[in-house]
Amino acid sequence: MTDAPSIHPAWFCVRTQTKREHIAAGHLRELEGVEVFCPRVRYRKATRRGKIWWVEPLFPGYLMARFSLQELERAVTFCQGVRGLVRFGTRIPEVPESFVQILRDEVRAKTEADAPGNAELFSAAPTIELGDEIEVAHGPLQGMSGRIVAIAPAAERVKILLDFLGRPQTVDIDLFSLLLPRRPTLT
Image 1 (cartoon, rainbow, N blue to C red):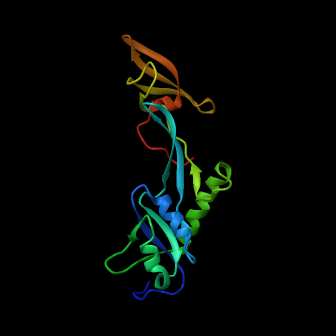
Image 2 (cartoon, rainbow, N blue to C red; image 1 turned 90 degrees about the vertical axis):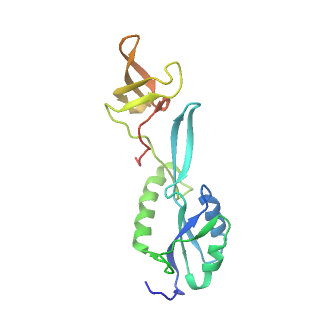
């Protein structure tokens, strides 16, 4: 990495406007000589209104773009949805080609079954374990807290142990009716 910008294309980390990564990626793709990588994750999330699908960038507020810094820095920086390039002082670091390739391979492996036409969108499922503390998000038991005692992944259902009417009760409930204690991870 030198201080003088290279005329050869390299990968750079681009800062985007919040929640507008996909817009920035679309506009950057329209520029000749710019290759964009903006992986997104799709997952189901339980809310108080029910289960819904969410799509979020894998790196919120950032994407990666491959271009010639000397020739296209200004065009990339002033593209709609872009806040600027990641900098350390006056230096704009390159993202190693090997890192981007490994990340692309991982995303592609997850994507093949989920979205054959979109190489940057993949699905994730919630990771739950026996004994996890949960809260019921909606339905007649909304707001109650309990612990997972059995999991039926094929049916997307779990058995939870609740303290109900003064004694412990086991209830079979839809997985997406629960508020889980942590975010989903890749499956």
